[in-house]
Image (cartoon, rainbow, N blue to C red; front, side, top):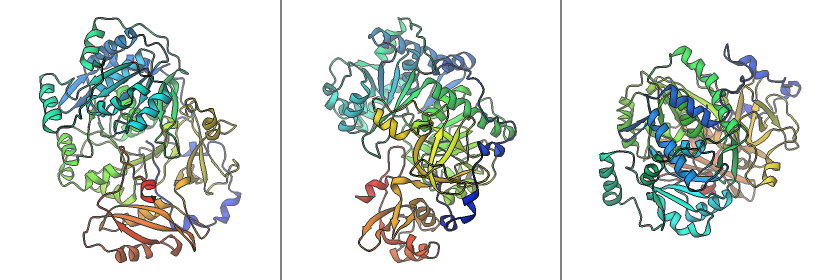
Amino acid sequence: MAPAKPAAPKPEADAAKPASKTAKATPKLWVKSYPDGVPADIAALQYESVGDLFAMTFKQYSSRPAFSCMGKSITYAELDRYSRSLGAWFQSRGLVKGDRVAVMMPNVLQYPITIAAILRAGLTVVNVNPLYTPRELEHQLKDSGAKAIIILENFAATLAKVLTKTPVQHVVVAAMGDMMGLKGHLVNLVVRRVKKMVPAWSLPGHTPFKTALAKGAALNLKPVEVKGPDIAFLQYTGGTTGVSKGAILTHSNIVSNVAQMRLWCDVAYRIKPRPSDLTFICALPLYHIFALTVNAMMGMEQGALNVLIPNPRDIPGFVKELQKHKMHIFPGLNTLFNGLLNNEDFRKLDFSGLILSLGGGMAVQKPVAERWKEVTGCLITEGYGLSETSPVASANRLDATEFSGMIGLPLSSTDFSIRDDDGKELPLMEVGEICIRGPQVMAGYWNRPDETEKAMTADGFFRSGDMGYMDERGYTKIVDRKKDMILVSGFNVYPNEIEEVAMEHPGIREAAAVGIPNEHSGETVKLFVVRKDPALTEDAVKAFCAERLTNYKRPRSVEFREELPKSNVGKILRRELRT
């Protein structure tokens, strides 16, 4: 139940599939594969806006812990109070409905407070990756027209380099320990002086986060009428296909996706009842759409505690945090699951309460899924979506007992259409572009009608850029991104398939396949490998792949690396390996 690009089909799936030529998709054929009791369409929305959702959670779960970070928790009542204060402060600065406010922080307690404050004040959230370079930050602030930014001091030096070139008028600077009481002073000392994680910065006229909270506490948050079509988030895509664009996600987009996921989750709770102290592990960054909707929005609607992990790349530190908490819902990416499985202390944890492991963002590789189930006893349920779909568009059934390698079924009220380059719908089992229509699909790209027109079909489907096929049960298989496809002597080669085969080798920790130019075949496959076994050789890898892949798919060269380049979310960046 998350954005994913699952693994490639078995070699025989590349065949022409002559029998499929007459197999036509019937409307919503996937509904017959839904679990009992899951409707084809979601009912009328329970909330008109995300703010309405927050109001319900603050009232219903007031005494429960909502978020915790580094040993400090805040309750839903405290989140209500803090976000009300900060929202009032925003309004006191002259910000009005529809104004954009950028947020540039990792997973710290200030993040959910800030998001709730912005939305309750009728403003729009612009999520910013804290690891952006000055150039990337400047583009996003200018493109979004952000009038204010809330930033963790660790990244303030980046903002200082470009602030005068942006429309930002109000700067709020947070420190890691702001919401941690007396312990926060020690945390700030360690972050600033011992670990030296805060480069020197100067932002004249900025407001400290705690000051904004204190001043806002003396003010009243003015009610703002927010409707479903109003913009909740400008969610910038990673920019992998050019300049980063802001996907316009409305309040109804987000609320619809939460409603769709709730129907799916209820199936899992039939098998393992939902505990009263439901706990989500939030290791993926909240500025990413996966964690934003699946962890924050869905978690809050269910009255859950979200355990925030500021730096999941520190696997030993991450595992120490996990030792302190129960685990019920665990969203993650393949690289995160794989990294944890390679940690001895992780394998010793108590997984008896784990209800759901949700995989997305990239392909969950079968060897990783199998090891995860062996260690935790919990199946990784894979789903699929994008920033443009809020994000979840499809998911496997949450009562499944085996890892399928598919991205599952379109969610309630969601349509999938597999289309060729001319926009014509293809028969079942034929590979084409996955096109998506549903209430969670974005309203378009911010200030980019040209890009919106390219991305949307005349009949309202979003062109995902992902290549896949649908089977007769309504399950979809992704074979790769259009742009990542490798063309070898006229044959399409899908990197995910090569990578999944390589990952079956016991001496390989991580693998990534790319196409490199070749004068004879157009392109050949190159495989980048991070070794688990230091003695592993290029010849051994090639021989292993030769046993499992037809000739044109086999890697012609293998390069060993200490690590593979990844985005801050943990997605392997193939484009950086091509250069």
